[in-house]
Amino acid sequence: MKTIVIVGGGITGLSTAYYLHKQLKQDGTAARIVLVEASEKLGGKIRTVHREDYIMESGADSVVARKTNMVPLLEELGLQDDIVYNETGKSYIFADGELKLIPQDAIFGIPMSIESLATSMLVSAEGKVEALKDLYTPNEHFTKQDSIGHFLEAFLGEELVEKQIAPVLSGVYSGDLYELTLASTLPYLLDYKNEYGSIIQGLDAHRAKFQSGGKKFYSFRSGLSSLIDRMEEQLGEAVEFRKGTKVTHIDKLSDPAAGKGRYRLTINGSGETIEADYVVLSTLSEAAQSLLHHPELDKSFDQLRNSSLISIYIAFDISDDQLPKDGTGFITADNRELNCDACTWTSRKWAHTSASSQLLMRLFYKSTGSVYAEMVNQPEEELLQVARQDVLRSTGIDAEPLHWTVTKWDNTMPNYHIRHPQLVAALEQDMEQLYPGILLAGCSYYGVGIPDCVANGEQTAQRIAEQMAG
Ligand code: FAD
Image (cartoon, rainbow, N blue to C red):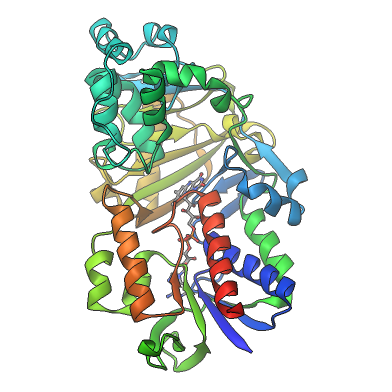
């Protein structure tokens, strides 16, 4: 009987285990599936924290509804009835000392109509005129491998990009727009530009795609960890879960030149080992790199990038009525007056997170911000005070916090730069030669969103099942 060891029990590793078990069962193939996770809990960057009536998500807080590959999985897990959608509301940008409304008829701050552009409170009259060049400037040289920042600036002008689009988009993709490709962010913008001659008009023509009744994101009644818990529960005895267990070493047991690998994984440096025919490394690339420890692979691994973020939740024992009507949060345009880069008014955006609509807020501090380097070393109590100052300056609220959680995601958020696809392709090729039977999986390579991680888990499982059958 073959043994498959999955290292890393985030959503990618769990999905790999889930689909592998399903496929092998269908094929009538018996196998031992072991999932090794360093922490005591599965989920990785999906981790729900419950405090009395409040639900806080340390990492991811929702799934984008547009990516429908999750639907069959949620049905199989019996989670459809637990789905909750985001409330639609108004988002703001904090600029010049105040909250300014982001035009509603816009996607990621990019206007979907001339009216949306004309009524923007964030851009000057000159900036609006400059953005109109989108209507009459054809695309002559941009491809999906170009940076989205340069692409947007070429047609919509510098001011609109800087004041209205970049604050939103770079928050979503946690990176500098000038270092992110169209391909890895919003590739359809190039198609629209080429087809309609204008980004704005292309978005206008496809607006139905972006207006799914406002229900763009979903979570679950008891938080996003329900997805993890239900998968673990359903896999039950079919997978050997080894939690609180770190893989520290991988040794080759056979000559990869023979085209087949067999590996020995050492656990926690304790000397305990597991032998495997297939290994899935669904950890961040840094952990995979140190386990494989090969100079050929280092050339590509060294060029993959991560960014960082501190997330701070504050729950108050006051009603969230004190926030601007229908508002769901804001993004900071520049950090001169606020330290946070964004703030979600969570109890407004996600009704399930605060059963009695008492105020729950989440503040984000990105590594690109000016205070991150200092904050990452500060104790949590001091970080809470920084966050309270930001709450006061942005909303005037000075209440005492009832609960709070601070999570530091230091250097753990993959950031796909322009060369990312080539680096991943090189790694795949090298892995096949050097470590047949070991597969890299997860957010470091194949997409950071939860649906992408699930899809990648499914593909990884498929590849192993095919190799086992062949
Ligand atoms: P991870 O979740 O990082 O899991 C890797 C696992 O490997 C970890 O559990 C780790 O402990 C384990 N591990 C590492 N080394 C070893 C070892 N040697 N031995 C054993 N185990 C090991 N995505 C969305 O779709 N929607 C969102 O709203 C969203 N918001 C986010 C907000 C934040 C603050 C962050 C950080 C991410 C967010 N994401 C969001 C992205 C998404 O959460 C991640 O990309 C995804 O969860 C990554 O899953 P993964 O399984 O690939 O990796």
